[in-house]
Length: 459
Image (tube, rainbow, N blue to C red):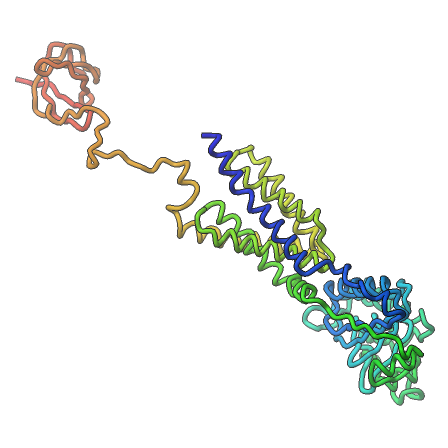
């Protein structure tokens, strides 16, 4: 019996290995994000044009790191960031800004439409800022997910100092950067741009205003004009676009999508283990986990260590089902599984919240599915449900129904159990509770299965 259980556990654990194969296949299909700049050495010095036209979040950060990596590998002369974004997460903007300022390739931020909030911070960390006519920069106040201003003094102070520091890197007025963040800052700017920054307002500048205040070095209509202004005419322009994998990763690492993938992954794998034979839940679970790790791998957050931790966790949980270890394997497996998911994410706390929500939702789905398929569950392998009834022709012992009404003599006292002679057979009997001495006449008043009840015959 134990051998069969162990073999079954080994037949289920390949689900984990299939997930690894699925992830590796996806990675091979789309290619590593850092292996694409192969031909740049053949075309000489180049200008890399990199778009920043999406929400500032972890996916953009990963894309920019990949794009700059290609530019460095190609020994690019200059990088032009074409910015048109309404902002995004402060933490990612801060990391992107520091990455740009520390990069050895000179960078020019070309504000094509709007460089709002986090987009302003990214632009301030570039060596130059060039703006398109009609574009704007500023409005970098910290807001929550609903778009409402965050008035926490520590948060406002931190972001104000970050913006001011970035502005000061290239000699820009730090007080103007502070006015883009803090509504309490008041500035007299009427003599320069025709209006003052009043208390309660968040400063935003047009292209002409930015140039007057030194927040833009030039105004240009397109990238070609920016290149000409930089004195880099004749250089090859290489436009770097997000790959299919990076676009997919941006969607897959969204917290809502991430949580849904975890729900489907957990529910699918557990259902396939508990109610084997369907195939579809296991496949859905495998694909969901594969997409989760693929998205975070392409975004640059998940390494193979996260995948290995997750696979070890799944394997331990499967083994625990078939080879009980008093919960030790279950605890270790759960810990490894959670660690794999959390370490693969950009924000561990967000990932932890997602997996808690996913576990609750998955348990609900599992319970519903198991209730709908009670007869197919793996627990049926360990529970004897067949009944050997009399109606089916099974008799567990000789029936005594034919003794009902017969008289016999007690050969032992009945206290209340004892033995009587009925005809030529010795029969074990009981009374209804009274005691009857030996050598007394009794009659059978009840015979149910093997249970024979007698009472004394009185004359």
